[in-house]
Amino acid sequence: PARSIDLGSALGDSRSRRVGLFKIFASHVRNDRSGMVTKGGPRAEQGSMGGLFSVFRHRNYRLFFTGQSISLIGFWMQAIAQSWLVYRLTDSPFLLGLVAFVGQAPMLLITPFAGVVADRLDRRRILFVTQIAMMASACTLAALTIGEAVEVWHIIALALLSGTANAFDVPTRQSFTIEMVGRADLPRAIALNSIMFNAARLVGPAIAGLLVAAIGEGWC
Image (cartoon, rainbow, N blue to C red; front, side):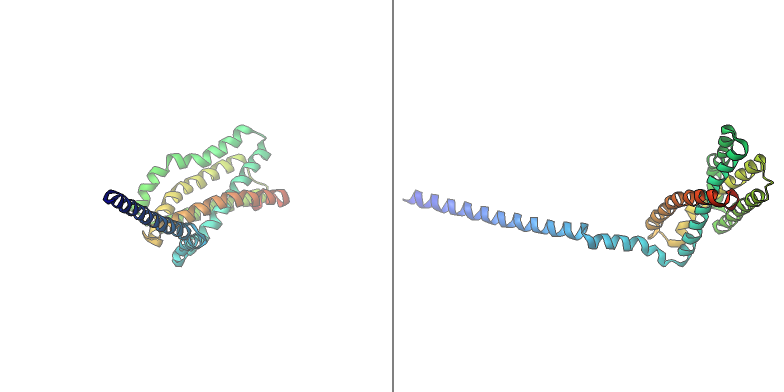
């Protein structure tokens, strides 16, 4: 009888331990599920989007973002209209590729040195100069095209000027971001800059195609 009593008490203790462990496990599962809902639910998504756009509280970044959006859309519009203009004037795939190469080669050859220049000089002034140079190139090409005086060598020279300015503009623009928003908001600003660039690459050619079909290359 003593042994049966000891065995019964042992079984009772074992059952109570299992019940206790099950309760602990169930409480952990509930906590994990609630944590998953909190971390991955709609509120978390709203908070992350609010955190992304909170970088717009910096006035300088708002101005920068607006100006760069317009500039990038115009850049892609000009690239499409310029390529179409070259092919219409010459009907030459070689010259079309040459103009594209001349416009992009400075990004490969000059950008490493442009980054050093951006670290040593006033970035705001560099951006001012590069934007003025690209605007002058676009306006000159537009005037020549509308006046029907444009030639292929004009397009090549202006593409080289615009590409060189862009080679200085890109690294300066990227390094200038931290001065506007600080280190805490830098990841958000970089994400928004990427969104801005890809959106401009989508919107710019679409607008250029409509304008070229409607009123010609000169207005792009």
